[in-house]
Image (cartoon, rainbow, N blue to C red; front, side):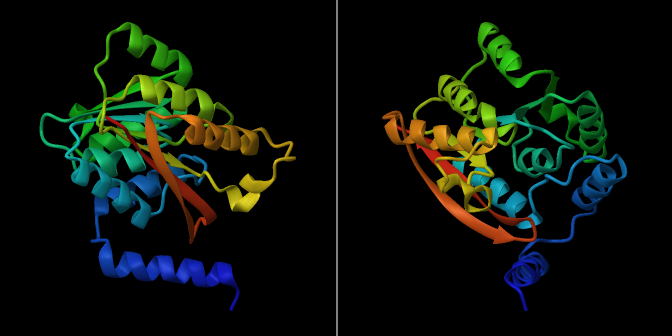
Length: 223
């Protein structure tokens, strides 16, 4: 049996054993597929990991850069207290429309502020509006902009803020310094910034599963 097949079967095993059946989350994935959204959603076990981060952090304020159809948004918003809030940024109006429907079906629209447009422009507006620091920031958008997203994440942080970046291993291509892929170079610059940035302590974890070979960056803003 090849490695990819084993990874997929193990993912299904973990999900079957540890991720309770949730028709709301399953419907979100179905809706995303029916709306022809790209299959970039986190896996159920990764969604549960994000939810656990929210709970461990005791987060009340979350910034999500990259909404897609709102699957990861539902995982995180569902772990917030009643007065919690997610600000989620999405470039594509069609994706945002699907996400809004998914969030409404989940009964979470009152906890999520979805802003549509270029994320860097949205972040600039949030800053101009005096948005308070966030407890957890999830970066999962276009990889060439990862360095800029990290800069903004640090602006919107306080000591103890957790910053998570998705898709930072890229099938192992992150180690190719000669890559001409702007996504690879964006992630490499992201790592260089993390290595040189005294305000954050970070690590990265390689992951394998039904979505292939990739990984997360996990960091905490120092006091």
